[in-house]
Image (cartoon, rainbow, N blue to C red; front, top):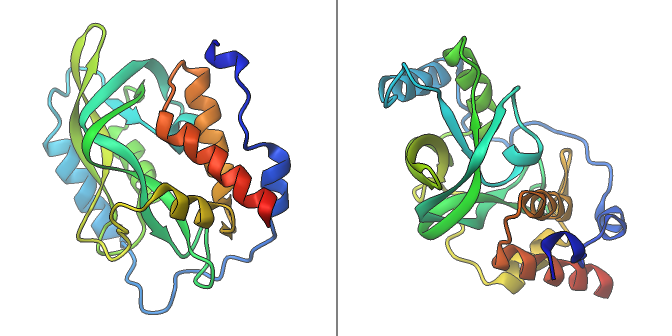
Length: 231
């Protein structure tokens, strides 16, 4: 059956049952935040490691950057990052979770491969674009989602693109979790950005729209729908 004709088990009705209004109470006490100087340092490091400033700067999107980009990125092409895979391995006490009911978000973790989409950043003000992107992707210290240059395989050959990978030294790294445990978390967690169920549903929908079938996420959305139906 073509991807576009196969309906997800996880629906907007499921998401609505989990959603609740959550006030953003700010960073949890005692958690150090990235500062303006920290972001400037990360921007400088990434720019210094740029493979070729005469060429377009590409971004490898594997999750929410596909359906909620930070800037006016131009869609480039699909690509595969080998040596990395999507994983719900980032524990969240804010944004899509709370200290009482933590959530999970995806990161690129080592091993396997990940099919995603390449986007091209604008030609001007690279530093400003990276600053805005980094402030969205990581907020605490030590860093959780680290920016780094990745080699991404495409139909036209390999390209270098900026991606965000999990820092296994982060206290928010959960390691490898069973799908059933991930589903239980996503079926309950909600923060001021919304629910984990919505995050998963949007990611699967937009991957499918680009012709990308992630079998692990497809199974996970079915497990989350079942968890919500049982609640």
